[in-house]
Length: 40
Image (cartoon, rainbow, N blue to C red; front, side):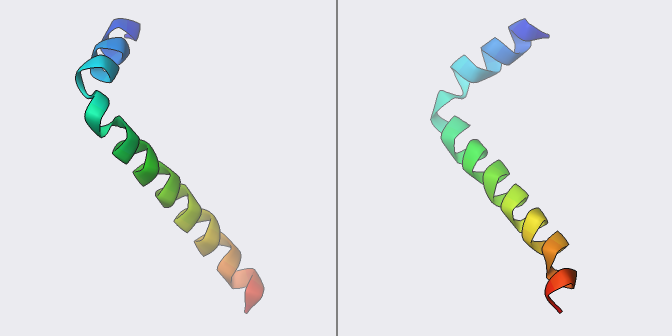
């Protein structure tokens, strides 16, 4: 499994930053959506 992760990281290095930013944006939207009912 670690070999697969290492291979994926080395072969897809150009899109790794975009994928990480996508994950961060999804987490931010999830946290914001969970806090919305408390604001109303």
